[in-house]
Image (cartoon, rainbow, N blue to C red; front, side, top):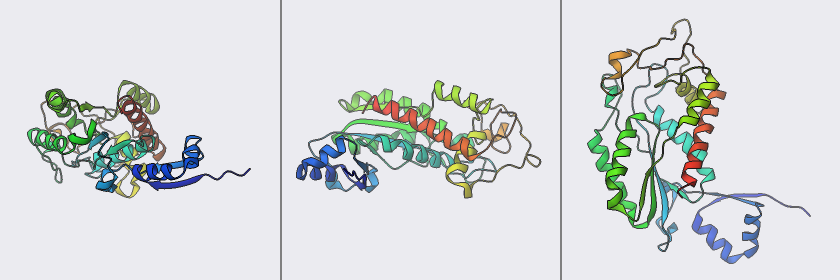
Length: 275
């Protein structure tokens, strides 16, 4: 007996129609003999792909457009968020991912050319409008952000708006936690960069190598600047925009891929608890 593994990319609605027409296809899928790569990027779906009788889980990713020192592009947080989501979404076939919000709360990087931000009040209203847009066919709306400057605002929004949107559940899931931090510290044998250092450079190097300039250890010796994220602009404490207390440059593609997988696995675990 010869078994073929068929791979195809179709929408959820098309899978349902296929299964109605062919019971054996459902059996093969259940047995894992057919692997369905379901497209659940909102931007790729058609309005007719939605079943009016169903409620869906949506993920709203947030990044940023802000300085990341002399070695990384301004879109680093957006690229990294997209890379983690791209890895995670393969394990979340029933979850719909919205396009990443690429301009958000980055005012702490004021003074560095290229940084673009909106105020927390503006982002709050944007999130409210997004929820108003999808609430009628949503059961869960999950917010995630790779950019740390968005986290406080997301917690505030979910806390204050949850009652308004019931029975839709609003959730903010972190893209890192104590476990991922411990594993990363052990992997790099030192502190994790707070901004634009070892792990972030490695992650972009793994997925967008042409956008990275690797630091020359002689021309760019490692420095250690302390920064108070609550009260100060980054430029006041770190002239080059890097905040990384690790004593050495530890940058490579393998580390970057490992970090992306680590955070994608966390995202999958946390979303599966909800969706």
